[in-house]
Length: 151
Image (cartoon, rainbow, N blue to C red; front, side, top):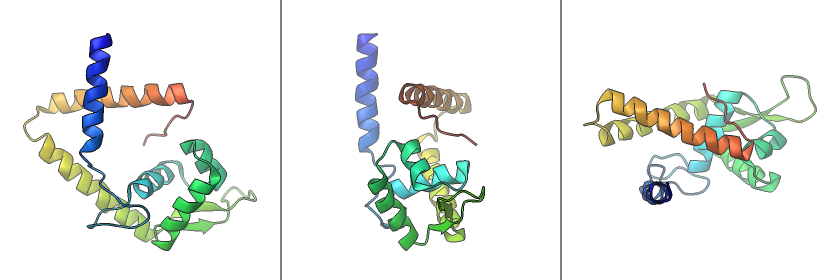
């Protein structure tokens, strides 16, 4: 198990260096959405409008970090603040039409890249890889106590 875990560590390090999500803070670069905005919008899309407190809990980040990220996303026209649909006091962040359009565009670009990378893979290998990634992610989420909602 120790050698196998070392191999997973090394391959994960290599995966992170490839920059499938090659971004710069707070703005689109070379037609790509900034990485934190991509993740932030993806979470709000699956879960629905969220407050700073809810985002802080979901991402395990302090409120000031989330304030910077949401402010940048609002300046970019990706998010807007709305009253809490449930009638609570805290205002929530919701994806704008432009944010949804750009998120869809970004996701399609990611899928195209993945298709090129796995062009020679059998479909059952792609499904197996997806299952292992999901298992890895859900185990991380279980250990952190922060499950990620899935569509």
